Image (cartoon, rainbow, N blue to C red; front, side, top):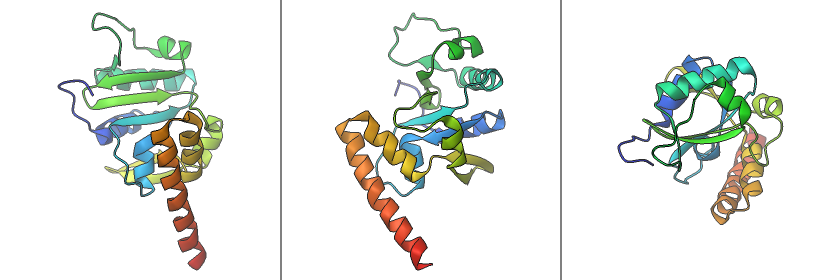
Length: 169
């Protein structure tokens, strides 16, 4: 996280929801919703890749003072729908911490399926969509990184426990 930035994923989620952006929270923040004990220091979202939504995302990112993460300090990026359309996955540092927007997250189903299978939680009065635990497991396994494999194992244990409780009624 950049010096001077405050990690506040709720503020970022609220800004996205208030703008009417079409997104699903994935990654560590979504894992927390399902009971994960893993710490996370960024907000990862998957998003619908249509022009109207790209404009909303760009507006929110500009309002959060987003800058490309790991880019040279003097690098400039025109943050608009056209730029977002030209790529799919972007990593930013904002005034509220790191935000990664992924148009094509590894291991995820197509966006419409990811959204349809998501769970909704109320966050600061807004309905926010979070990836299902099964899709989170698939995404974590797809990275191949040891920390994500460990997270996938924890999520599988949580999924088993959730299903056991649901079966018991």
